[in-house]
Amino acid sequence: MHKEYAKAQLAIANLKGTIYSLLENSPKDSLSNAEIGRNLGIYSGHKGHEGHISRTLLAMMEKEGVIEQDEDTKEWSLT
Image 1 (cartoon, rainbow, N blue to C red):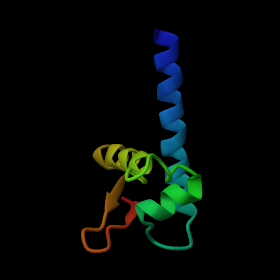
Image 2 (image 1 turned 45 degrees about the vertical axis):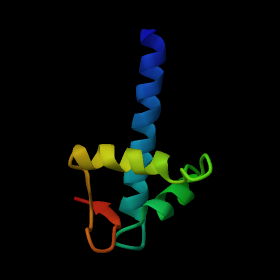
Image 3 (image 1 turned 180 degrees about the vertical axis):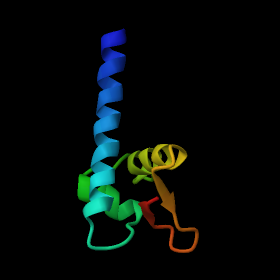
Image 4 (image 1 turned 90 degrees about the vertical axis):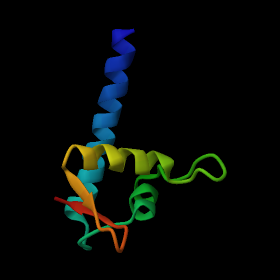
């Protein structure tokens, strides 16, 4: 079971790193969940649940103190 867990954690780390890179290299100062998810091909999902994958990753990164969400625009940027 440890091998599968490690693979899953590596996949999450790779996705978070890619989100960080996208925000870092974006011509805009901040991006919405939809912009991030669509740019990475992870926005679609089960009907009515679009954006949940990217939003979950963003919440994880926010908790880690790496990114922050503007309360007014709802867009994400690096801290």
